[in-house]
Image 1 (cartoon, rainbow, N blue to C red):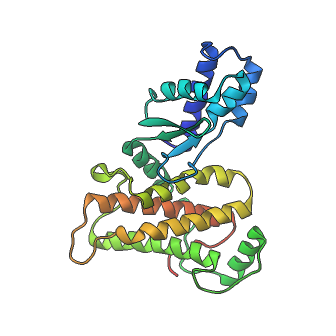
Image 2 (cartoon, rainbow, N blue to C red):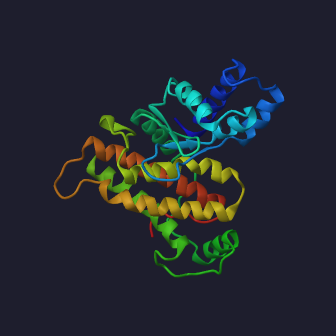
Amino acid sequence: MTPAQLSRTVLRTVRRVAGDGALGELSPDALDALAERITVGRPPRPGCGDYATNAALRLAAATGRPARQVAEVLRERLAREEGIAEVAIAGPGFLNVTVPGTARAELVRVLAEGDGRFPVTASTDPARDTGRWAAATGTRPSLEQRESNPLFLVQYAHARVRALLRGARDLGFGPEAGAGGHAYDDPRELALLGLLAEHERIAASGAPDRLARHLEAVADAFLDVHGSVLPVGERKPQAAHRARLALAQAAGTVLAGGLTRLGVTAPAHL
């Protein structure tokens, strides 16, 4: 389940709850205004599910009902929806949503399928790339080739993805989202997948500085997991390696797409 799909599910559930009178009546105009204020995004802390939504708090404000009461009604309704494994109430009425491993694998597959849509080059144009990155972020240009330089970090992470795909090909295997039932439930994988899930919304915001910061976070999270993608030594590739390679490919797609939006090179080698 993608964030967009979950957002539609949350909004559909809110409309049903409001429509059947479980929490009082709301006019169509009030429902439309409410929908614009409901958000679905990453939970504020690790271990709090895959997504968090403020739907209960917004609906409580619109109906005048206690937030915890509204949250319990929405929790019970959302938990019945396909593609949702668990819904928990947090704080004053936030809802933390956990999806099954199959839903995470579907998100990885969707993201990874974008591979090839964005230009990947053999080399970079450092002066041009640095200037465009600086213009997007409002920072001073830097040509330093080190991980403390955000542009270098993002380009390096993308190059590492391409290297992993080449290495896997040499070993005779390719990416397969969710291979062997891999649920992407390692904390580092969850952190990366959460960032990847946010990319479409952030890219659509039209704020280049925000997109650049997001790409830096994706690069950091990818580098936390990339060491487990290929088998070590004489070990043969397993299903988990195919699944992690798909996650790496998804990260590469997001990095390449973001760099392209900023007019910056997505290198295959660095």
